[in-house]
Image (cartoon, rainbow, N blue to C red; front, side):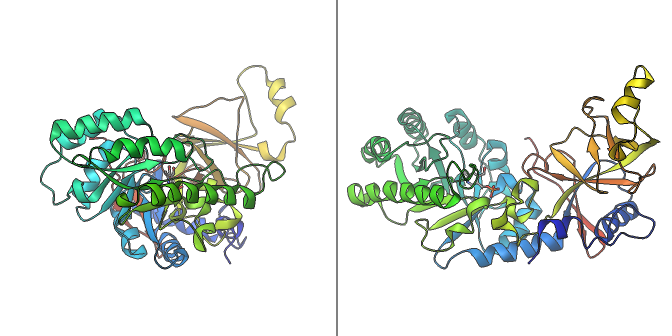
Amino acid sequence: MVTPSSVVYGDATMADASPHNTYFNGLRNALDKAGVAWPSVVIDRARMRRNAVRLKALIAPGTRLRLVEKSLPVPALLEDAMQLTGTRALMVFHEPQLRQVVQWFPDSDLLMGKPMPVRAAWHFYQHLSHTAFDPARQLQWLIDTPARLQEYLELACNLGIKLRINFEIDVGLHRGGAANPAALCVMLDQLRGVPKHLEFSGLMGYDAHVGKLPALLESRNTSFSKAVDAYRSFQAVVRDEYSELVSAVCWNGAGSPTIVLHRHNSPLNEVSAGSVLLKPLEFDIDLLSDFEPAVFVSTPVLKAQDGTRLPGPGWISKLLYGRRAHRARSYFIYGGGWPAEAVSPPGLVPNKYFGLSFNQSILNGTRKYSLAVNDTVFFRPYQSEGTLLHYGPVRIFDDGCMVDEWLPFGEV
Ligand SMILES: Cc1ncc(COP(=O)(O)O)c(C=O)c1O
């Protein structure tokens, strides 16, 4: 089994004359060879591909995997991941990305992951051009309230089209959607009356709250079984009272944190996950311990100094930092202020008194893992969705080299 610490920090073998272990030293050498000397996102393709194979193996027979596009917003990455996991189903969260996804993947099957303002849906239809993608068959809009359903009905009438409607259900996260089966029935009654324009396509819940509460308040098992009961009660009302609408419906749910739990006896016929393929920092949970971190932010060290000196009287810095081993060195790095944690070399910490900078930020470190100017610092981002879009081409590392550059989706 691969544990987070053994993966991130490697086998503790430090590379010769380097503050990095063998793994990060390999990444650093590859970046140097490729001449990448500015903040960059690096994906370890071999790790990502192993994660994809692991994810596929977790999907129960008869269940479909839907990859969460916002967590992997890079066309080449999505294509690789779709091929390895054997799915063409994606969950999309952003209208500009939706327009790009239908161009890149005209054979995909799309479910919106959040209720979009109706004007965004209108914009999508106005700008849908030259693609084999057929929204009437391949796209489900997500609806959370009767008011939004009414707006989408008006959109469908105005455009003279039929929309596929998936209802958001609250299975315990309390982020909106139908709060209970009665609230769902209000929307299903509305929909039932306008079969020419609206077609029921399924229900979508998200149970990321499972396992997040302190165990003393509610154990993971309890919150998971409550979520499962909620999924089932919403589905039961559809089956019992709207049976004419139930043909080939999509019962979507899960998410990376609970994908392992939905392996057996799940009420879902479709599970969503994305982040686990790259395993950013927030996904270091016991359920995902078999998965390997595959995304990093790298940046060069611009300045390396002994000690830590704040502006102002020298005695303040002495008082705060004198004899503190983890403040023995100061580095000013290229960029910073990212939602990420420095992971290599070990022991790097931010300095809250020096303040935040997106241009040159400070890190403090120990003498044991000392960096020099032009060395590289590696971070692990907390999430992939906030990271992959903001550093230009994503650098693809495989077999000791940078083998490719993948452009993320743009803001179009
Ligand atoms: C509706 C929904 N489903 C699933 C996911 C899971 O995505 P990931 O696996 O990338 O955490 C998310 C993430 O935000 C979500 O909002």
